[in-house]
Image (cartoon, rainbow, N blue to C red):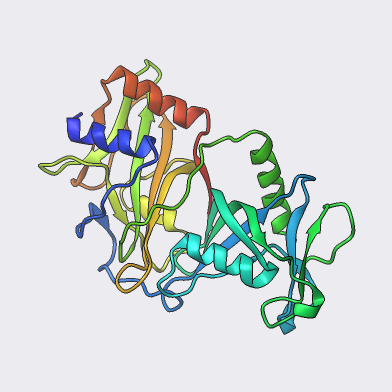
Length: 304
């Protein structure tokens, strides 16, 4: 393994970001820059908990779900970062100001729908009352999760449980989106092969300057992870995120997902492209750190 590849790995393991170049190691289609709300949709959602473990909820004003309750959430607007979008949605729908603590999870259904779920804390503002009802929401309230409340959708219940669990015992370190531009949906892979004898292999580019593989996600699949099937017959069963890079704005509506996964087999599986290859991880300290991050589940959940 080259020193440059080791440096990339250390940067990502430390929670840092890496630039996204204009060329990709795997691309199943011609790159087309994404445009928010036209070819891609990002949802930001906030989970805020108070000292009594009550969760901040808002009452819907939309005609199709009028009067039901939900977590503060909404679509990202043009030119916003993910954190800016979160803070705006929480303020508009609940009246409160907030500060994000970490991403809790990323959920995706391909380019058409990606939801970024944050754990955040209240930093000010005034809870929205029925007298302040508008097109954004009817009111906001703290919910004890026991009192009956008509929910817009029960998909938020496991998210609330995830937030409560993380607040008691943080599984992964605090991970917030890093502001870095890219015009496309891109996967930067930290893909490990763990062999019974203790060997660890990692997938890298086979170019003159080896680096972690960059995979351009197709815009026509139901999952961004489907792009892995173009070069790996049996993709890892589960993957998590080391980080998320996004900027927003003209030519930068894409996201780079720094993704990590592992497969346990007797030897590295074949790769169906000459642009990628396996290389042995020989740095023992780096090897142990990678193994700990993967096996102790120190990754941000990615639900596909």
